[in-house]
Image 1 (cartoon, rainbow, N blue to C red):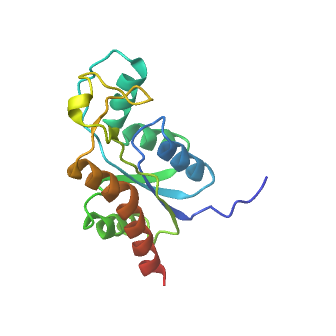
Image 2: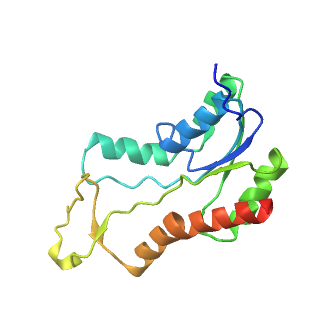
Image 3: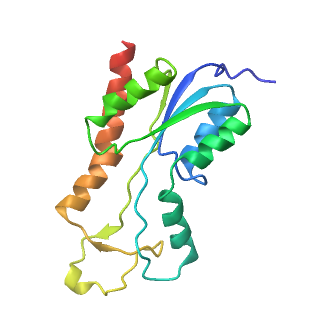
Length: 172
C-alpha cells in the first residue's frame, strides 16, 4: 500500500454539494486516504426547465442539494467531514470559511478550489436570440449582462484568488 501522507491532514474543498460532481469525488478521495475534510457548498435554486432534457433537469436538481449525501457517504466509510454553506461571491465569507474549518478541525493543510458558477451567456443581442435559445450543452443561454459577468468573475476568479491568499496568510 502506498502511503499518500494524507492521513490526518485537514482539507478544505469547495463546491461539494453535487454528489455526482468533482467536489464530492475529491472530498471522498481525500477522506478515503485518511484526511479530514471540511466542505463548502452553495445550494442553487432549481429553475423551471424550458425543456424536458433529462441531463439539465438532473444537473439542476443536484446543485439544489445540501452536502448531506456527501457527508453521509464519507462518514459511513469512517471518514471525518463537516460542511458549511457559503456563497463565495461574497469576499467577506472567505476568512469566515477558514475560521469555520479551523473551529471544526484545526488549521487547513490543503485547499481545493473546486466551486464554480456557470450561467451560459453570449454576446449575441437578446433581440436576436430565440425564446428557446440553447448553448452547445443544451442549457438555456441569454445575452451577457454586467451582473452575470460579475457573478462569474466573483466565484470563478476572485474567490479562488482570495481563497489562496487566505490560505497563504494563515500559513506564512
